[in-house]
Image (cartoon, rainbow, N blue to C red; front, side):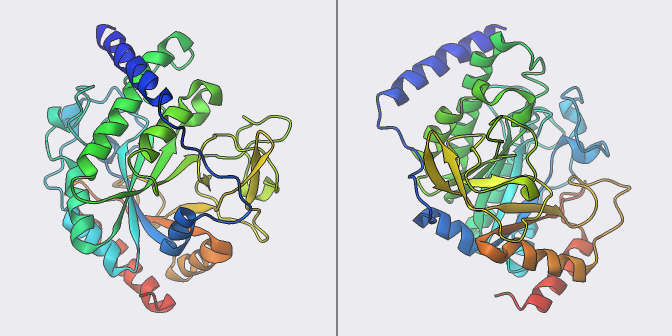
Length: 348
């Protein structure tokens, strides 16, 4: 608890500083802004689910698995990003911390990270270097829900300390990445575990945008209902123009693993203002997000090609998940399928 109290003090100092600066917020508009247009133009990317879950044949572990159980024999980040580049993908989204709370970098704020594992490679740094090398955009996934540090989500008294923890870690991630390349997207998850007002959404947005103005920020299950802005979930088929933005401020919509519908609405509201928000689809190439020894069924190429066409129509985006295995490499079958997709779609 002493560590959390210290984090709270640091966080309060940080929030005080940001409050003295000009607030950065999305600009009300019924058309995409310049940074949104860049995201729409990227169109196609790779989700990279890799972490402690990779070694337990589980999608969601609870933060109790020992850090030492994360033990890849190698981290071939160069292969990951080269695979994305060869597939015609314009960016990747790397899992930095999933719901279990295990961090793929050596964080000053927790011991549940790679520094205490079987492989101490800073995966964020390795991927950022490879993105620079291959001219592939870098996106980062970060779970708001953390079952290791903040497992008692019902206790609101713990929110301030944990919120400071998140802001500190986001700055760490930016410190690591910005040495090599810009961060084009932050993908946040797990917000549904608390009421939306309990998350420091504005501070998160200020932290990112003050350092990476063009970085697009999205939070899974982005849209609410008019009668209940925090309703969970509102599926793409149920979203209508003018519905409230559940997590404000943010720049685009998420709701995995769903595809957009025909006549996908783009205009959503907050405090009486209208905001343009494209949709980003995130889909597994096989059946699981993380590598799993039982995950041997892959989606047919024709199905994935059709998904691409549906997901990228109407100025939207597709992210296809290809999880590295316990040897730290993307599976050969993923690579074969990605190359076939590129050939069929004639991607650059």
